[in-house]
Image (cartoon, rainbow, N blue to C red; front, side, top):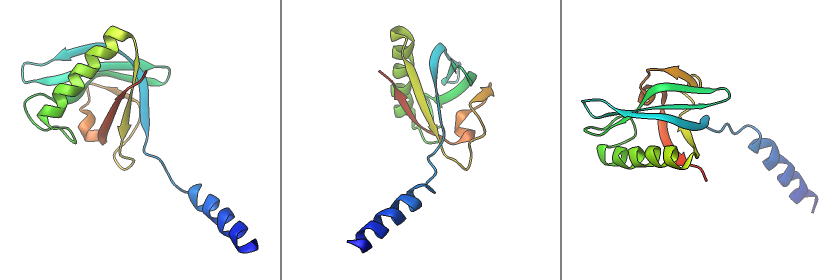
Length: 118
């Protein structure tokens, strides 16, 4: 029994060293397209200020997202605006700098996952 308690305590100690990848959560206020197929958005909420950032590309792979996946992202962004719901973006820890960017390509900052929150 004593060994089980020690093992349990050690597992909790090890779990405290796990670092989750950073996220940015906010409301989508603008969505736009460039002539080259770039999908841009503004996402804000408190400390989050992603202004006119490139989310993905409709014509080519951009970071972790293929052109086909970008079509889905674009649809989700439009839904978020229409439903006034917030979204969450995940970034790889080693490339992330902050949730405050202007006119930046999110692929350069390790953007890899997108969720429309309800």
